[in-house]
Length: 112
Image 1 (cartoon, helix red, strand yellow):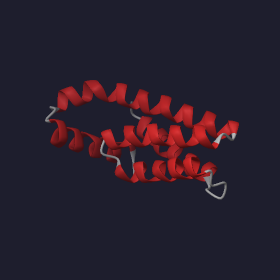
Image 2 (cartoon, helix red, strand yellow):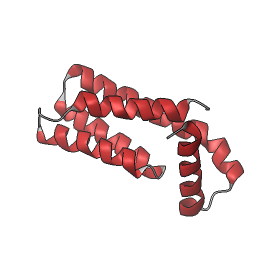
Image 3 (tube, one colour):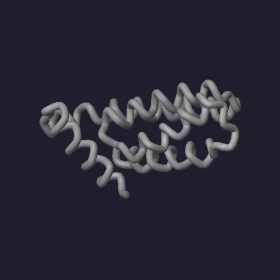
């Protein structure tokens, strides 16, 4: 998907779920993306430290942020990180899942 596709998906979700107008969403979107970027940095720091508990917590946090924006596919990826971290499952591909989320966030951020 492109940045415009993601932004459209977010806009439609926020309009339906929270009854926000397009102008309100446009005004709030940079803040939402900034929040996602911060959560992503925390997830990457947890990955770098190889701390499964921290990965689980960071996965949980970013999952919630994605769900708040209606990005359920992204939330599913974050859920895999959350579960793997909380279960101490070293077979989970944390690096691959995190890279996938980074790629998506970079795409979303392109026009912001």
